[in-house]
Length: 409
Image (cartoon, rainbow, N blue to C red):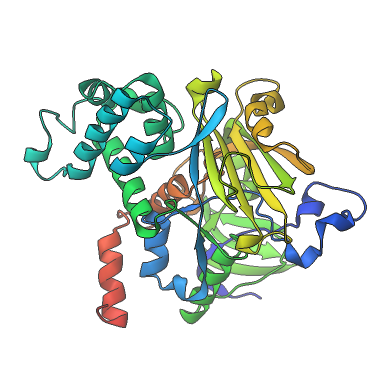
């Protein structure tokens, strides 16, 4: 195998029962093993988000089939409600009172018309200076509305954004609305047969451009000479390279812990209550609703996405750990899912690289956070791209290169 590559990317794969060291065979009620494709860290794709753009521009979509998620919900006062993101939904929502609905509708109209390149749409707001807190105040929105707007529409994990310039938040809300407009039921997509299809799609694309995939290869050693990576050793053979991309598990001496995430995979025999029997959905529990500093997420998928046996549902609860009893922290989410047939609990360290990797040419990704969407992961991908190439990742440039190869759409 002593071959030389420009870049090597390291990855791993495990089955659910091996991962959680469950003895014996699953009960017959679970159906056939081949009917299940359970993602350990499930994340939805925003229909108009960064990952979908990457998939479209790289033509990986030719290898994938997606299905829209049936609903997006938010938790308030112990109950869940559909997230309103259009004027019509805002007026029909039971999440708000009559006067609050009118104020929220005006806010959504403002967001829809907002264009950071056209000052006529600002209405006295400076998008680069005015904090989001002041924009909410301008429309006289109450705390519950602020909660679901910031966390279920703009998808922030904490309330830190309230004191930052409003432009980013307004654009996040626009992204949610634009994603919703593409398919109607919700702004989220999920690949049929699970997220394992994504690396398979990229593997096929990589092969077209001369990439080599070596599966089931244990990594013995990352070889560094004079402070710079020169190769990866596996089973006595060396694959030489100029750059290396990997997750934190391969280079524990080059990463640091910044927190923990708890995830609970729950197998259900019923859809989640109060979701109109949706076969898939996302539920966000804003931090303020459960006296926390960060949100709790619930991602539910089922046989509709070819990831579970017929009549079975997979719900995954996740959040950033804040106490010494993380399982108690997610109790509000688990109560929404009851009865739970079986659950698998994991607590993972949030690891980040100690340096940029420009000297060693070892480029390390961040550990996956608690969110149930790919937007933060795409930010990490773009950051790695910048560290490797020295230039910003540009969607428009990517689109131009695609057109040069395949021609205009």
